[in-house]
Image 1: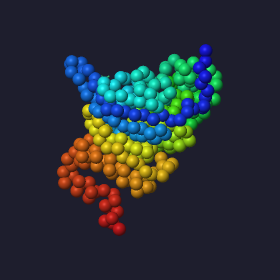
Image 2: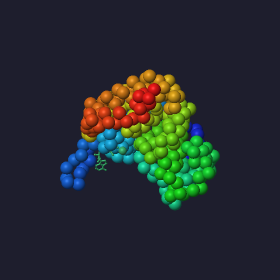
Image 3: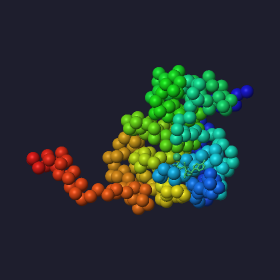
Length: 295
Ligand SMILES: Nc1ncnc2c1ncn2[C@@H]1O[C@H](COP(=O)(O)OP(=O)(O)O)[C@@H](O)[C@H]1O
Ligand SMILES: [Mg+2]
């Protein structure tokens, strides 16, 4: 029996997410506990593009899995579209940090997995799946198997898969991390465009300051473990901005503000100890300086 799911129909308004004092502790192999996320309270507005930015190991993936209902919270509660999350959320597209594609299925069949799992008539989704594969740059690879694709291409197939049901909520865990720089640039443009065209709430996990500032309405900065919210920064730049955003003064102001927070927290360090002599030696021999000397 087919559930009444049609391609591209959308599922009503974009979802809001409310986190109330959410914490997560994991048991360690030594019998102790790892405090991964600590007392996070946050509201993601309907239709907002929100990034969660923080150093490796600060609990970003843990937070995303809890929102998706794939991992129970230890304390607090999470509401998605007003409903407390107690089991895996169904009306959601998830892109995991590593592309999780089924090896025995073609790229197109992988993209069609979600409608199939929902009991929909997959034939009705084929055209949309093919369109999505074109938009993520995988035209011509529909019938390839995942092992025939590079890591970046597999990740792009995962993004198409997350979008095929047109979910009102998109949870993305470092989706651009495995991509080369140019593909990453293109995916930013495509992702922003897709978000501008559709009404989706997006939670985008990243450790890239660039990605966060270029894509988000708000950036949530997490502190090193145990991850709690350190700062929330509004990015009020005109859109579309994925390519042109760097020209804006506001882009640099935001980047500097975030960098300053990471420097203060010790996540970034100005220098690992170049001596004054090393810096002077480099400056003396740099082409720019030589040109200056000649002219
Ligand atoms: N399944 C698990 N069991 C035990 N510890 C875990 C588990 N998953 C993550 N952790 C620990 O929780 C912390 C946060 O991990 P994670 O959410 O993956 O961080 P991030 O995505 O920001 O890199 C890390 O210290 C990690 O080692
Ligand atoms: Mg992670």
